[in-house]
Every structure is written in C-alpha cells, then in structure tokens.
Length: 319
Length: 308
Image (cartoon, each protein chain N blue to C red):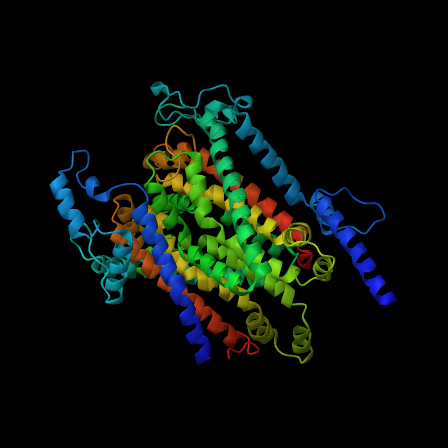
C-alpha cells in the first residue's frame, strides 16, 4: 500500500519539474536549481561567438526589413537613365550609395539591396513557420499514435518527399500569373514540410516512451494535454534545430525561384530578381550582381550560423 | 533478405502512385490552359482547341486522364508533346546528359566531402577542423546560382581554364565545372556529416582496441573507423542521387547543359504536362530505388543489421 501512495507522489514531482521546463523556454538562469535543457542551452548560446555574430546580423537585417527608410531615403524603384550602370569603385566612396552604383535602369543598387531584405526575410520566416506547424503536427500525430495512422501519414510524407523541391515549386508557380509573396511562400511550404515531419516523428517516438508520459497518462491526463504539455516541449529541440537551419535554405530557395523567373515578380523588390536582371551584363557591370548576391549570401550565412549555434547548444552529445 | 526486398517493393507502390498522382494533379488542376497558350496572344479557334483537347485526351474527366496515363505508362509509353514528339525520345536524349553531370557532381562530393570530413573529424577542435567548418559554412550559404556565376567568371572567363558553357556533354573535362557547382551544397553536407560521426567514433572502444593491437594507422582509420562512420553518410548520399538529378535545373541553365533540367524548365513554362509528369515519374523511380539500395547497403556496412 505505501508503494501505491508513493508512486503518484513521485510522478507528481516529475510532472511539476516537467512543466517548469515548458514554462521556462526563454529561461532565466536559475540559481541553485537544476537547470533545464533550455536554460542550459541559453547559457551555452550566450557564450558562443557564432551565435552573437549571427544574432547581431539578423537583428540588423530584421530592422532593414521592417523600416528600410532608416537606411536610405532613395526610392528603390525610381530610375535615372543618366546613371545607367554607373559605379564608383574607389576607396573614397566605400559604403556610400555611390559605391554600390546603379543598375541598368539607373536605379540605386544600395536602395534596392536595402529594400530587398523584406521579401527574402518574410518568405523565409513565413515558410519556416508554416512548415514547422504543418510538419510538426503531422509528425507528432504519426509518432504518437503509431500503428495504421503512422503508416498512412508516413506514406503520405514519402509521397511529398519524392517530389523534387524546385520542380514541384516550378509547376505550382507557373500557374499563377501574379505571384505575390504569400503564393510563393505557400507553395514552398506545401512541398517543404516533409523534413520537419520526419524529424518530429522520430523525436516523438523516443519521447513518448518516457516515464513522465506514462505517469501523466496514469494520472488521467487527456491526449491533448499529454501531447502539448508533456511530449511537445521535450520533443521539439531537434525540430527547432532543423527549422533554423532550413530558414537560411528557404531564403536561398526564394532567391533561386525569383532568379528562374518563377518566384516573386517585378514590383516586389527581391535580391533574386536583381541577380537575374544582372546576369545579362555580368561582364560589363559586375557590381550590379555583386551587391545583391553578397547580401543574399550574408543573410543565408547569418541564419545557417544561428542554426549551427542552436544545434550545438541543444544537442549535448556534440559538446 | 528476399522477403525484406519484396516488402519494400510493395511499399513503394502506394508511394509511386501517390507521387505521380500528386504531380499529375498539380499539372492539370492548377489554372492555365496549355492548349489555348499554343495560340500565343492571338484568339484561339474554339473548333481547333476542341480537336486538340480531344487528341490529347484533355476533354476526359481527370481521373480517366490519370488512369489512361498510368495504363500507357505500364506499357512503357510516356505519351507525346503538343508538338508531336515522343516524350520517351526527349528523355532518351537528355537523361544521359544529366546522369553524366550528376555522376561528376557525385564523385566530387564523395571524394572531397569524405576527405575533408575525415580530416576535420580526426582533428576535432583543431585548426583544420575550424577551417573545414568555415569552408562548409561559406559553401552552404552561397546559393547555387550565385556560385555558378562566380565559378564561371573566375575559372572560365578570367582564368580561361575551361569553357564557360558545355558544348559537348560527353567530354568529362567540360563537366567538371558545372559538376562542382551542382555538387557543392551536398559536398558541404557530406563533409559535416562525416566530421560529426568520425569525431564521435574516434573515442569508441573498438578504436582503442585497434590502436592497442598495434594496427597501422592507415588500417585503423581506413577500415575500422570509416566503415563504422559511413552509415549516416551513405544514407545522405543515397537520397542525394535523385536530388542531384532533379536539382540540376539551375546549374544546367547557367552552363547551358542540355539535360533534363533544361527540358523540364521548357516543359513547365510551356505547360507541356505530359513531359513534366514523365520526367518526374522517372525521377521518382530513381529516388525510390536508390533509397532501397541504401537500406540494403546498411547490412554490408554493419553486419549487425540483418533483414529477415
């Protein structure tokens, strides 16, 4: 009999500590208490130079995307043909708008590079969010229920996984005449969720065997509560890692689609479109391609570095 | 083993049907009328449109179009384009080109990626490791189309080592540059994956035993360590063969390689549904079979894995 009273009590303490894990996602360093995976990860992150550099870069890019007028007062769409392909690559002009030069239609490349941040970052963030929610849900259901639900959902995932990404995106996007931002983001998310689903499924399968899940079920917690309060916070770490790294990839993918002429279209300013426009005059005016391409690489680099840092922090095995 | 293969082959059937159905639906349900597009900006003659629709079976209900397509497919018929060419001829022309390109990319990615990964993994935390890490970080963050133009400008236009575009796809020296561009991203992933598994396995007991037995270093690294570390790398490489072939669109465009990427780009932008579905079908088959072969390779690399 003492055993019976002891077991729920023990699992109860496990439960509460489990809930603090969920609540403390942006954890403050706890003094004296055992640290959770998240506060531990945050401690590790703050000391990682890779994280600090990439975070600063990303903050700068976010500001650029939200208020581009902070950086330039020039209209990125107004062209002055007297400036056609002009550039002043002298050191006296370094980092001035003149140094960046002008494109074929005499538009300021500096202004276009600044304004281009919005499209790239919005698509990247939107696709990553959509993919994480969609893939996360499908993976979680497949992993938690197992059995025939898992078989059906896994085959469903395989079907989408089998379609080459760019190919599928091309097929979808050609059928839209005006490709607005959400259309591009939507079709990328439609094809891209499989990786997250697979990672989530694997992670949930390991997590659901934990004692605290059994304990929660023994206490009569409902499926929803078990899934979202107990399994999700403990299974999501690998998903966050994959999603952060993928964000950089989606920014590159958006630029690639725009470059192919199948992504965003002209009134929207995107680095991919500008790179595509610049390719015909690559030999005469390399600066027209250099700056948007450089910004694109820098942005992707920032997110990949962030992803690397997050992975190092969340995966203690790699330490 | 035989039963395992049979079960895997059976599992492939729903995935194959599902993927072809999905791409078929994407091509045919989404808005846009390829028949009317044949007239360009001119007004299409409704009678001729009706005749052409009937000829290509586009007036049938969608499910019937799909079953007809699949029935033809099982007899090896891929249908024909609006211009009257056999899709199978088109593919016979362009697939070998892409296979050669993908092969060059694959060799570059395997040789360079694994070498870099092994060196970095053996010296984890040292300068070599950091250099490889920075290199892979840079390669991953430069999108393929940007890298393509950088390589083309530097190696072809400025240095003149190679021709800027591929004139003869049977000449492997011309394929090295586009191959390197195509394989660059995967190269970085292979290097990182190899580095991680090698640096984990270096600390394992069997490594200490091998060292204690006094085996030569070459044998320890080349046989004991590599064989145990390659499983995740082989998994990645297996799924990558299909990805290289399907992802060659951009690279083929930059270097003017007349492979399936170019064919696909043309087919998709002209609404040639039959060609698009045909090429994707072949790519899906390649993808399914490479993942089966990868699973069978596990047993070769790790004798503990047996397929009953």
